[in-house]
Image (cartoon, rainbow, N blue to C red):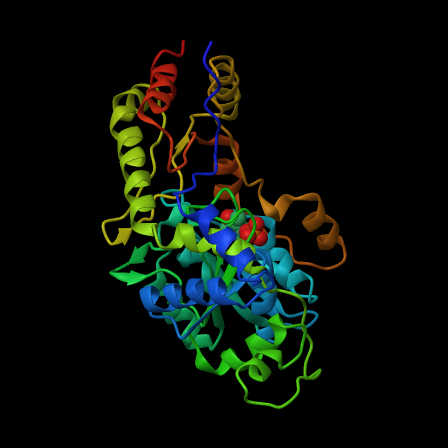
Length: 380
Ligand SMILES: *Cc1c(COP(=O)(O)O)cnc(C)c1O
């Protein structure tokens, strides 16, 4: 029998290894050197953000956002209940209370109609996640946030090079974060970036990222020695990884094109089957250009999903599910006892039981994708 079709596989585009060799032979292996700068410039020029700082992870970029927004104990931060833990933890680390907002049953994005009722005098930030790279309703979200003067941060881990009403995702919030983890569209194994849209954050972000020192200004020749000037941590990415990352970033359009073809094929090939089996396919509104981050299906029930995953596994096809609701996680419940507000998120609870993600990576070949599709169509 042929090898299983994995859920995800690193898909190098060709130059990654060359660039890593160049970084090493140039003796540039710490952070903020040639390849880091190339990555940052590419992100800044393509997206038109004021500043892009690549970082050790998206989690760390979110932590930088929490520091930049001066998040203090008992501040409240509104986040979707259906997301990765880092969206919450980066703020909880600084003592904030996460207030979980339910998601919409169509796009699985934060439900903007529920947002206003969650805002209190303590609300310091709204963190949105463009789930699967499909933009949240930013018009409405920004209107509410501006009215209450609350900062918006985009956890754009899924949405790099996606657009909402013609505008790049990652350019709506005062800050946005990217992930270059192995499971994301553009990757270097482990990595991330902080995108800065509000200029006032740039100087402090450089300091926080460099262990609370003004080392970046020192390297630019703006100060004659560098010293401890603020809180901070080690959020810089090694140039060895930045070299890998640049090999991917410069090919972002090719990667996107491959992913688009895979996504469209799943969507077309599984459309009749989905209808016949009470399965829902992803909803992508007209005004959202998605970067094709994942292909998911919503099964009719949790039992159907378990069977689906198990039977596909028997056929050598690795489908997975993700995001247990954060609002009902052990940690959140424990904290609720200590006074966190308990949040009910019925749509998140429901979706989290029924969602399943199909194998999806840039180099998923046609034969392997056929195997996934045929296996699904032939399930009994
Ligand atoms: C992957 C992911 C993260 C974390 O990214 P890391 O780079 O692994 O820290 C955060 N938020 C969301 C929505 C993600 O999908």
